[in-house]
Each structure stands twice: as C-alpha cells, then as structure tokens.
Amino acid sequence: MSQEPEPGLEELLAEQQRHYRARASTYSEEALAPLGGAEAAALRRDLGEAFDAHFRGDVLELACGPGTWTSMLAQRARTVTALDGAPEMLKEAARSAPGARVIFVDDAGRSPDELVYGSESPVIMRHREGADGYRIVKMPPTSAGLAARLGSAL
Image (cartoon, rainbow, N blue to C red; front, side, top):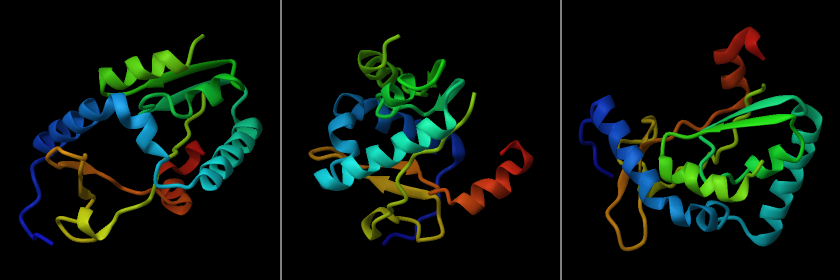
C-alpha cells in the first residue's frame, strides 16, 4: 500500500471522469458482476420494493451511470431526470431508459488493493482489465452519515 500524498481535487476529479468515460460501454456488465445471480436478483427485488414505496412522483437520479436503476425508476415515477458527469454513460443510459426525490445506490466495497492512500482516504484505485488504474473518490454512504449531512432535507 502506497502512502504517497493525495492528488489535488481537480486532478483527481479529471482522473475519475476518465475512468467512467472509459468504462461506459462495459459498465452494465461489470456493475453487478461481483454479486452472484441470486444476490443481484435480491438486490433488484429489494430496490424495487423501496422504489415502490418512495418514488412515485418526480425523481432526480444523480450519477445514473448507464441507467442500471433508471429503467426501474421510470416504471414507477411520474418523471425521471437522470444526470451523470460522463456523456458516454448518459448515451448508454438513453438506450435502456426511454421515455423529486434523491436516492443513493452505491456499493460500499473498498478492497485492500484499492486503498492506495490508506483506509481513511476517500481516494481509491480502480483497475480495468488490460488497462492502467484510475483514482476515483469513493465515499461509501451510511444511513446515519447521509441523515447527518442532509439534515432536515430527508
């Protein structure tokens, strides 16, 4: 594990953007790959139940990626506005999501080989097969942490 100084914010965000732009075309296949078929099905079922309970009006989906959850939201919400910083991700999302509240859906996984600046750093290294790694910001949210940050907005 390297203990190099963390990069500047602009450099880090540019690198993160390159990572997601480079992986847009394969992200859908890779996103749930770490989960087995039964685990992925259970996640989709649980999210579907949560979406049914909470997302009937207008929905704003931030960092929608290739639309992994967008089509499920679109089946339930009156409108969905899906945003992402990578145009390539939005192009992929448009293929699967024709046609407010905010929800955070993200993995909390941070493997030891990703922790290039230590376990307390939000900066991790993500690798693509046959390509160099990319540093990205990964701050796994917790319910309590989100509630504290969002306060009365919840």
